[in-house]
Length: 215
Image 1 (cartoon, rainbow, N blue to C red):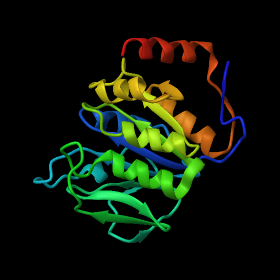
Image 2 (tube, one colour):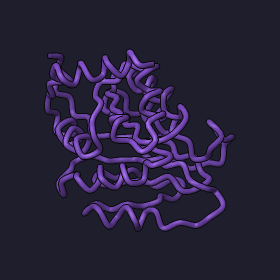
Image 3 (cartoon, rainbow, N blue to C red):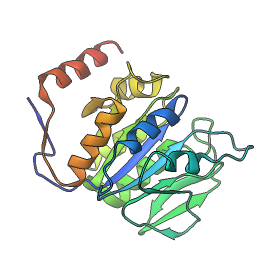
């Protein structure tokens, strides 16, 4: 068995990326977080830039935590779930969340990679990157950046994901630490935010290895 967070560091800055099928996965994940979860979550979900949506309100129904679309420059607060607004990239910068209409990445804005990369640059080993259901490979480079800075990477189990390609691409191109269901991810995030060490375990290690061989 291999240990995850064997140094027992608090990993309390979580970045989440999702695309096709990812809303349901994100709802399941945040719905399984305990009310006293001690970290901050920032999420990018690929969505249309042209149509208003009530996604933050929809997500709020499943969690006791506050889900908000931040304004540019909002200070980062713990015990919050931040959702990137439509047609804006969301990034970390000096204790704040910044929004901008920079060029699309992976044909989309907001994109996952800018959020993941900025979190890794600012918060280093405190960061846990999570890729949920989606198509394409947005978020893969971001997960690599997170791992390079000492953070931890998690993907939703492709067998559970409605669209498995984002998790699968992460497994193909990054040394992913954990492959879990959405609800299992919530339990892992809670443990990591509290500075707990986790055993990957032989079944989990074998699952990751089998998925990587399929690449």
